[in-house]
Image (tube, rainbow, N blue to C red):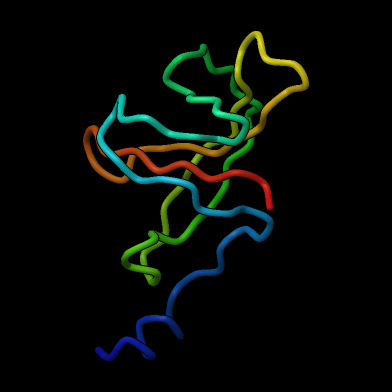
Length: 93
């Protein structure tokens, strides 16, 4: 299958999300204003977000929307594991 065919067959992604980071659990991530999610508790919003893998854009992954505990104003982000211990982070566009 060619790249163009793979992209044509890929399921749609949720719009409104911008890729921030992919890395091993605990690696520093900047969600904006120097906020690292690993330094805070996370509170689920209950919303699922479908995103494309940043290196393999035909792959789709479910991430979940969160807010950081104790941060005002609220900081929303989507995060999830691509594979065991490898996390991806997205912020609203």
